[in-house]
Amino acid sequence: MPRRAVIGWAVALLLVVAVAFVGWKAVSTPRGAGLLDTLPVLLQELPKDEQRIGKIILENYQEYRLNARNWSLAYFGCLFFSAVCAALAGLVIKLEFLLKNDGLKKDLGAFLAMLSALLITLSTTGGFHQRWWANRLAAAKMERIGYAFVTADRNARLEEFSSQIQAISFERNEEIVSGESSRPKGDELRKGAPKQ
Image 1 (cartoon, rainbow, N blue to C red):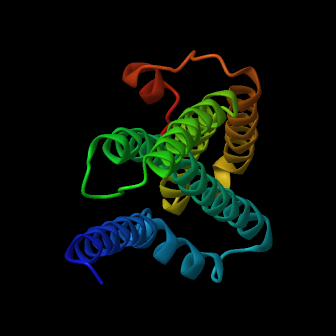
Image 2 (cartoon, rainbow, N blue to C red):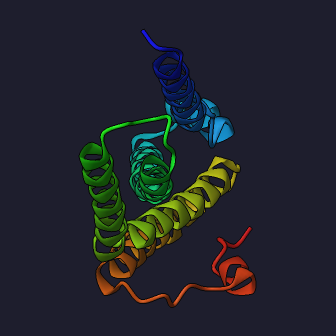
């Protein structure tokens, strides 16, 4: 096997390992571990009506976090893979030592450029960023409610918790469907925090 081919395969393997490592770290990094460790234990000790609200908080939080992670993977995967394809398209056409066949170089360069454009279009028209953002914000709001629920005064506030859960779910869906960027600023987010 020629030396150029060995170098090319080594670089490709190194890129695959780097992408796999970054993806694994993104998926395995703990998020909301305090709530996920504390709330299930607390739920076992609570009366049925409090358990019901606590389970809804926990399940919604887990769902929104999973959705946020998946849409993040879709959005940033398309974005970064598109950038890699665009860069490789130019690299394949320009570098002489990679491929000697001009027809193959042009075809591969055109295919990579087309794939890059398709990934950006898919990400944009599919609203991946909006879906990621809406789920991430909903998970953060649900986590905030979860920590408020863990406090001792939860029984008197069950109706308030239920209303907040419904509002977060509606806002999340509204943000995904509308696609408008009417994102609240930090002060507005803090105003929506549950009363302590």
